Image 1 (tube, rainbow, N blue to C red):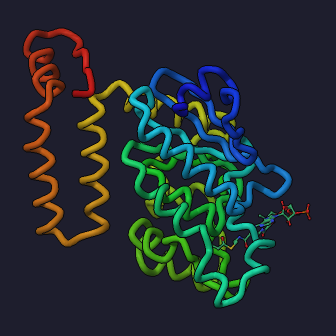
Image 2 (cartoon, helix red, strand yellow; image 1 turned 30 degrees about the vertical axis):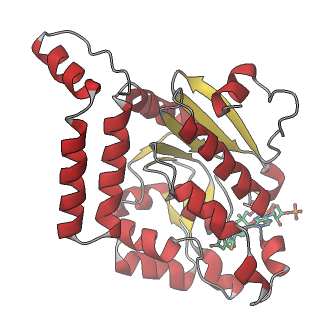
Length: 274
Ligand code: CAA
């Protein structure tokens, strides 16, 4: 069963497991919304939550009806980090066999664009999850932080790397070393998020952006994501090489011919994802 089938039906088909920690729905054609739904624990990301997000994204990757994903924690909180109760049960040996790195890997591997809609606390693993999104939209209530240092640990899901790329060394150090939170306006000024909206409009804005992306030729959207991410992963020479290869590959697609022909013929393009 595909993710879209789950959501079109509004519930899983018989025999399929219903996610307990997230809600999944198709909010617009091509736009799948994943909502973390553990409000009593401030959407803390227990292993099950991460597994459900990873599985939903794996399903969405295979589903041609999904062109873009909106990831949110709803109107009050994005996610207050890893579930500290789970962390308490680990020692230096058991954490080596922790299942979570596998789920993070699956989230990172999701090839289609993700837009995060962030309200309220976005802390620790929550901020690391938000930074797995490609575009981050914050409500005025959003609060970002990497407070792991207060627990005697450090960010463990890419926070030291992605945050540094996003906000620069000194700002990342300030957050990681002091555990201090920053508000939405500061996150915007530092480049962690793309826009700040009124809190009640965050999801709408993220959905609008996702809807725009969903109408684009999907292969080009996917390759644009891959190429931009390369800028964080490899040196300039390799990044330029990857961009050039993707650029040339797209010349073999029907959607390239359609996009160019539609422009020249002054009509709207009808992209097919081929
Ligand atoms: N894990 C587990 N439970 C959490 C949690 C977390 N990260 N964050 C909040 N909760 C729980 C609280 O224990 C509390 O549960 P009870 O009602 O059963 O007591 C409930 O959520 C509400 O929390 P508060 O009463 O504290 O709510 P608040 O609104 O006053 O404060 C908060 C919210 C500032 C987010 C505060 O809860 C907090 O500081 N949470 C921890 C933040 C944190 O340290 N995150 C980093 C985790 S480590 C990590 O993420 C590692 C990594 O990189 C992968």
